[in-house]
Image 1: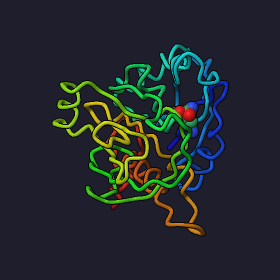
Image 2: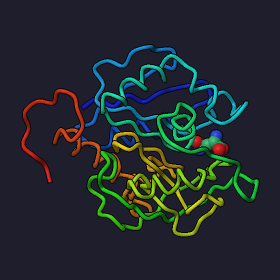
Image 3: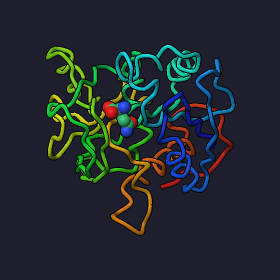
Image 4: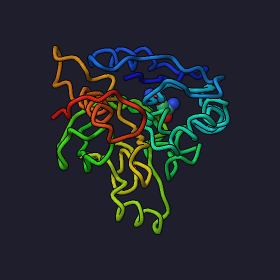
Amino acid sequence: MRVGIVQFPGTNCDFDTWEAVRSVSGLEPSWLSYQTDSVREIDAVILPGGFSYGDYLRTGAMAAQTPVMKAIRKFAQEGHPVLGICNGFQILVETGLLPGALLINASRSFICEDSPVVSLTSRTPFTSIIPEGTRITLPIAHQEGRYYLPEDKLRNIEASGQVVFRYANNPNGSIHDIAGVSNPEGNVVGLMPHPERRIRHSSSPPDGLLFFESLLISLRNRMFQRTAPDLPLLK
Ligand SMILES: NC(=O)CC[C@H](N)C(=O)O
C-alpha cells in the first residue's frame, strides 16, 4: 500500500514520517511535492509536521493554497485516508478539510514535551486498532496548537464523534482538551502530537506505531477506498 508524504518548503518531519511508514511492512512511502496537482497510485496521504512557509501569515495558511492541496481535497472527498500531523493538522484546518482553528498556545511559548492523550474512537483509518479510551503518550512540539471552535460547532463535533484525541493534561489551552479531530466521515484526521516520533521499541512504548499499523489494516480490509488486491481480513 502506497502512502504519499507531502513536502512543502519548510516541512521538517518528512523523513521521520517516511521512516515510520517504512517501518510497517506492507506500507510503502512515496514523496508528494507541493507542486503536484494530482494524486495518483496512492492509497493514503500524510501531511507531516514542520514550519511550512516559515509559519508566516498563519500556520498552514500558505501551504493550503498549493496545487497539491487542491488534489488532496479531491482525494479526501473520494473517501481516501488523509492524516495531518501538527503542521499538517494546521494545513488541513486551513484547507477546510477539518473543522476549527489552531491558535497560539495559552502560554504563548513553544512547547516540546511528551503528552499523554486518550484515543476516543477507532472509527478512523489511523486509529482502527486502538480501543476507545486507550491512553497513549506521544511527543508534542508546537507554538500554535491551541484548538478552537465556537461553542455551537463544538457541540456538533462532540455529538458526531469527531473528537479523536483528548489531552490527559491539557498543555496548550485547547478547548475541551482537544488534541485531534476528524471530518464527519472519519477518513481525514488531524492531531497536534507526533506519532512518527514514537515508533521505536528501544525507548518508551512505541505508541506512534499504532497509527501506521491501523492504516495498513484499514487499507488491507478496504475500510477506506481504492483497489486493493483480494487479501484475507487481518485482525
Ligand atoms: N512540529 C510542528 O509541526 C510545528 C508546528 C507549528 N509550525 C507550530 O509551531 O505551531
